[in-house]
Image (cartoon, rainbow, N blue to C red):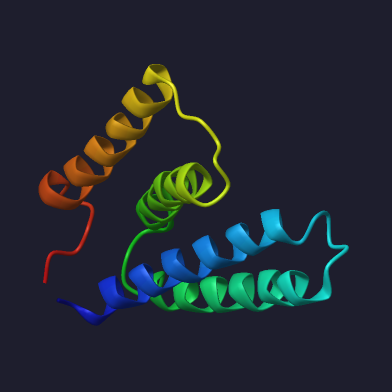
Length: 112
């Protein structure tokens, strides 16, 4: 796996951790989760910037935000007991499909 994909995965994971902590921070009234938010987003943007040295910003952002949406929806469901109805699940499936189309078929991404 090319290193820029590792950076992108790390960016998504850090963003997901930061967003999960944002929910747990209760509008920044809890110091521990609030600190995790700041660190998580800082790490996410650092790894995102490394990815941008190789891949176009539009495609990187589409993959980063799309995976983040799916992961956060799943975390919301399993950790925070937030419900997903059929339209939400279909929408998430379309996001995953779009990411796969970009990654597998687009000549705009690097496949080295």
